[in-house]
View (tube, each protein chain N blue to C red):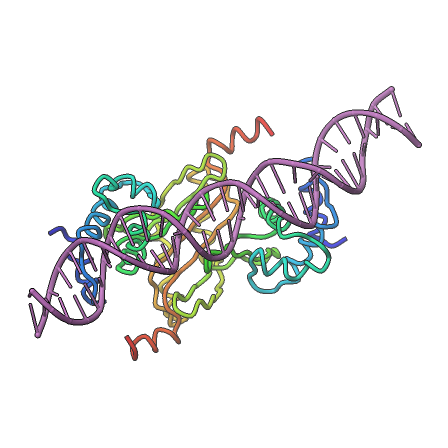
Length: 146
Length: 146
DNA sequence: GAGTTTGTTGCAAATGATTCTCAAATGAAA
DNA sequence: TTTCATTTGAGAATCATTTGCAACAAACTC
């Protein structure tokens, strides 16, 4: 069993829940996806295995709580997620124009945030730094038109 | 005319739009509100003046673009906003349990972010740093129960 | 001033992501 | 195999947000 599957199983057991085939499939799909994904995109990947969209929506919060995925940006009214690999967390730069998402390392800020958390006695589950604006491509074209 | 009203008017004119009574009312309401607000809460404040919720929804993106308000956290499926006063931007700490929102200064991180933006040639419109987890109250009670 | 153009609004209806309901399926445990 | 709690797919329901539309309004044109 893969690393993150073990982790998920443990998490579920702690809550008296089971690692069912559907859940395992959803987890696997979340980890094969190498970009951001939303509920529907993930479902597309596994609907052939007869896993319903409802189950995807039910499982996503579990993966979130288990710390295996994180909610990143919200685009077009849809929540997007990405898996966590033990990689350092990163910031998301979202272009308002072309909706490109650029990722950068967050470690430079991490310590400042952790320090603040200690002061607040806040138990961090997720950090999400999103910066919206215009990417270099759209910044240039905005100068031309408009 | 108040400062931010001038700013909004200028912004609108640049787009060939007008500062109508409804829009002015919405702007004013957004600035009297001293906490976060969502579309409905803002509408409650001004519906007596016969401004429809639809118009609120239509105006919010304009205020956003004009840089007068910012979208902060999303709670209970609703987008929340807050006005910008030229104050330094702040981080939002959202308790998953009691849904309290704590705000802290963001200036410590600002320079690191700006630096990164320069490297990416990214034109920043909004920075949003949201940290979810448990506030000190809920952290303690989580230890007891569950 | 009458007519035209363009932006605006409230209302009601539409949209669409997410959640819920429910009856059937599953699975661990006794 | 009976029990009992959990899970599931399918479809219905929910609810924030958008949109279409007809009536309005302000700015221009002639």
